[in-house]
Image (tube, rainbow, N blue to C red; front, side, top):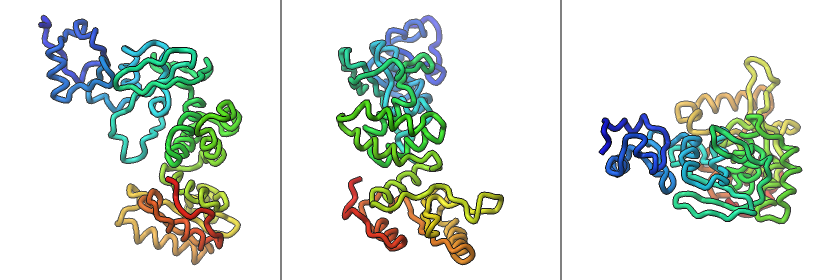
Length: 310
């Protein structure tokens, strides 16, 4: 038994099983804390207080205590460490998944609770953050563009671009390092269409549906009549024909805002000649082709697809 009173679980750092004694703890304390949900085993033998489970760097630090030293945090975990959540709005309460990458010349370890991948990994693709090896912003963006589902991949690309972490032209050159690899084509397509100006995940998803349908590439964050105090900003649109679309997310466009949103769009059409169609999350993420049909009518261009692929 520990000789002193065990510390509160929420005050502990990330720790590994062999560190129990130095923390003044034992296996019985750990079993009770796990059962009570005060501590979570993020990978086999590595633990995080439940209060810190939403901190990606803490989760990575815990995993690094037990994983082989050449394992590099990658993909979604790396994106989170760099400040971009690949899980999407309203989903960020899910546990952070531990994902690691090892250079192709190394043996890929198997570790319960972690997804570890093997791939070529140059020295310049690895950075250290908080004592943890993490794929660089460029490599993280390239991996997310390849391995996430298209709507989330584009949202991540838009966000890392908006944060100034990557440059689209650099990514377009670097994606050719993966020519012939699975999903490289998806990544190339999405990188071409990334827009650092997009302000939300929903706007990114919405824009991808329009692009996939073969409609002309829209501009994003368009000011009407121009950028100045009192002007109105549209999510995306086509200035030459004065047509636009807006993503009405639930956070800022609930039922109490609907009348004001309608009045604003009537004003845009009446006083500025802009037709604006709103869309909501269920339309953007649903399987129905109604969104493509409505924007095809708006633009006078038939969609080039007959069904959605995501």
